[in-house]
Length: 305
Image (tube, rainbow, N blue to C red; front, top):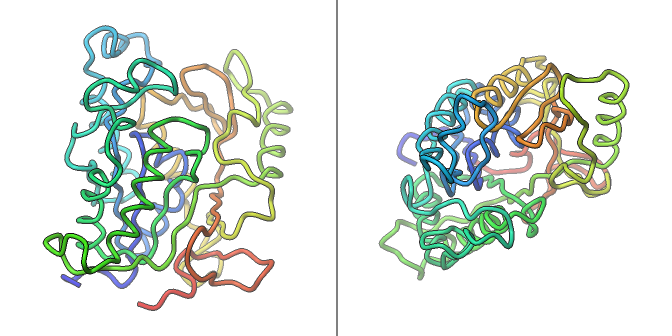
């Protein structure tokens, strides 16, 4: 296994900052516990809106240098999470941020949304066969909230997991490997409702408040199969480690995209929403590692080394 640790986790995200918002606690926890945590980001996030006024010149309709700047933000975030293996799909700049659904950027040359899924999946197959992760985390088929790059990331990750396990497909990319468990990022509805109730009661220094409809991946509680938080350690016991603090620091590193105010944050719309210090998942493929009706507290539960 080329000296890799026994537990290996791969996350596939669309843009820089998606990983910190969705999986910062999870990534910090497993990296600190000695697992190999690898992140593949599919675009540089070139079409993002810029929050700080002094960085507005980076925007795509001005200097169009936001992508390279966000590469630096992502590197800083990974340092906060303790993650040392980060890659861009096919290399930095291979695919460009496609903008929101229906935008002209969807079809511009090099846009990720316009990429052939099998071709893009090939780059990820190479990573999967090299790192041989047991666990893969990505979005649901809707990408959490319908962003074209998130939907495409789901398609590419799912297809890559399928192709990586087929020894007849591109043997030049390495020996076949089957991912044991595939998870989708989720947030249970009850947690979202509680978070916004707390926000309304406490207040935050943003002009407005978002709503539950602005949180990606919200589902009914019974669909959640795993949760990870500060009171989980590698034995499922109560480690009490400050993974939530690492997540907040990583989010803060994405200065062009995220503004934090204690337990709340806002994106470029300046609308406050809760920062979730527990992270939730739905097992989309593989065998559950917890009894029916209970949630896993370890994404590797039931996985054989």
